[in-house]
Image (cartoon, rainbow, N blue to C red; front, side, top):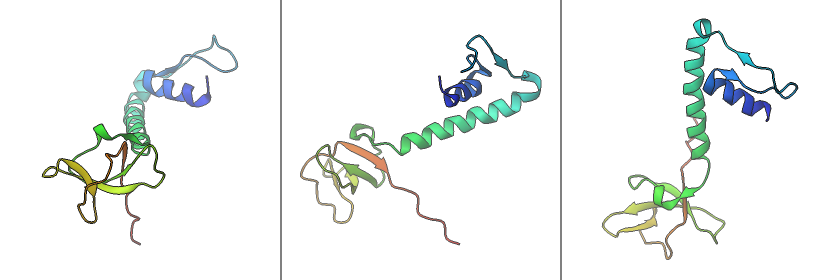
Length: 117
């Protein structure tokens, strides 16, 4: 078990069940003092998992149909900006609303634009 796995287990359960040096050791947190830290850490962990999922290609069936997303195909290496158009009942190019020749296989949210100074 990696140190990251131990840390995630610590955050989720409030304790690390294994130690790479001694599998029988256990570290428990003081629930009274660390309750708020633990709750904040759990929320942060959920946010991290959500952000990681956003960085991975997901099946097109799970794509939102109300905004522009990146789409790609199993056999195509360059993603395109696409949008679901209900009136065409199809995924289309964002720039001109033409339907894609083949239905995309995967989608990913567009990256956030850089912050202005």
